[in-house]
Length: 103
Image 1: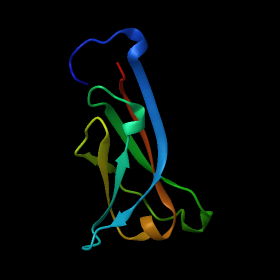
Image 2: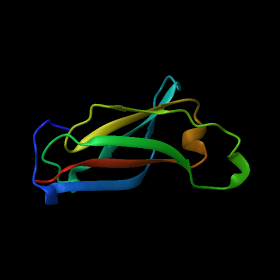
Image 3: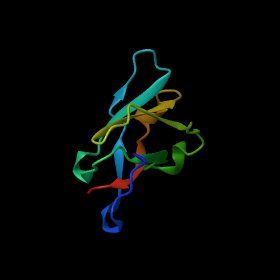
């Protein structure tokens, strides 16, 4: 939120499900770079994210950690999740929602 007022029809919500794109070499966390440029925000939005599981129930006993949002801008953000490489191996995805203004 940028602290300025915007006209009521300018409020917008974008949401998507993004695969975790890369695995950090030290295997302490996984990360995704999420492009939100298509949302056309005019100021930095508020972003929430969580990990979801999209495959077989076989691996549901594996626990997901919290998601940390880093380097948030109008067009991208980085999301980090602590944990082992099961996020990449077993089809975990990042479900995110960005709320902000587009005018």
